[in-house]
Image (tube, rainbow, N blue to C red):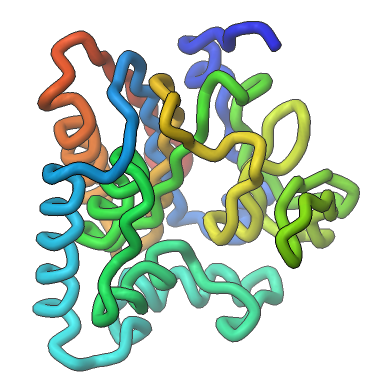
Length: 239
């Protein structure tokens, strides 16, 4: 597979009008970061997760995650195309629900973007740019788009549901139900050094707050990697 054109990843990215018709308040902040250091969970990524856990506990103050307006907005968005909370939750709600037991420690890069997601209450996804084919598009699925995943420990390919909001590239769906579950093909691993991050924003999150979360993510990823670089693009209601 050829090395992707990094600038084209951002310039070619789109949010379909059918998605904006569903949620006119939606914005996506896309961040391409190259030259970053992967590897296992380290002291810095563990500390970032601990700070995020403390922040979420303080904000919740014993209340349920769905009491937070940022999480309630995502429940409403998924219900907009027929997905109930018992079937699938936004990625940020899934993480916040794990705060009391402790957020998972997966690997350095995933830990850092999960920490930003929880601390800023915004869904964040990370895609291995070397495995991405063509520009990212947020669309409402026709119903024949392939999605590679794992079921009962075995690789399997399924299709998105008609009308479901999905991120996709030229090969298929990269993330189902807006930000619920990522495909296997573009997941990060220990060798990943070029990543497309997607931060999904809905009201009451402002554009400024979304961009602040993006800046925090870039800082966390590049502060100890002088050769790293980052480029961003805002799509949607204000992009």
